[in-house]
Every structure is written in C-alpha cells, then in structure tokens.
Length: 180
Image (cartoon, rainbow, N blue to C red):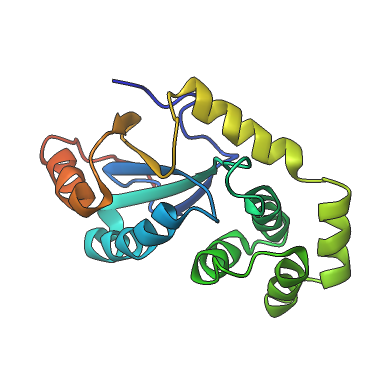
C-alpha cells in the first residue's frame, strides 16, 4: 500500500481541526470530471465528520488530457497567497467547464483579488513550482490518476462512493489527539 510522501506539513492547504483523528488528502485536478464528481462527496463527508476530519488538497494536474488544469492549480495557489485558496478551490470545481485564463482572472476578481495581478501571476508562472512540487509528491506517493485519496497517510484504493465508510472505519481505532 502506497504511503503519502511527504506527510502533511505546514505548506499544505488543510481544512478542519489540527486535532482531527482522521486525515484525508486528495490529489486532484480541477479539470478532471472524476474529481468534479468527488467534490460534493468530499464536502458531504466533511460536513458529516466535522471535527473528526482534517482534509488537505494537493495538485496533480493531468496536463496531457486536461489543458487548463495547470493554470487552474496555479490560480488556486495565487488565491492562497491572499488566504482564499479554499474559496478558489470551490469556485474551480463548481465551474469546471469554464477554466480559460480570462475566466480564472474573473474568479480572482470575484474573490477580491486584482485580476491583473492574477493574470500576470499566470503569465509569470509564479506558482508553477508549488504546483509541480505537489505533482512530484504525488508521483512519489504512487499517484497515477485523479482523484487519489490518502487516509491517515495510506492510499485509499476504493471509490469516492465508499470513502465515508473507510473514513469512519479509520476513526474506530484512531487515538484522540491531544493538544491546545
């Protein structure tokens, strides 16, 4: 079974409690229809599990089949620089059929980010190293398609439709994390 490499750290985009007893990591592609189908499932799982779950998203743009995936990932990182990663993440999945650069700049504007700055960031490939680092970590972790999920650092090979069951099973033996 493949292991998440590297494990989650401060550079990752995460939602949920740092003391969550279960970690879910998704390697995804904003243009991938399978990731788009998994998006509402993950949202529902987050709602259902609440503070028991920490969710992280890493980029794995499949650029040979999804020509807009790289720039979509980069605009998410650009938004992250303005503390709007998750808002952009949601917009991109909710508008998967509209990922041209002009549309990406419009999404930035919607989030209060200067669209000219966002466009220039894409042209300069300012966030490409971050996206490529995620992709490389996916390769090291055994990712070969999207979405690929990891539960508590181990690759989950089931479908998104059984993900909640697997996560709930992971909570059974998980020790509660202490901290403050």
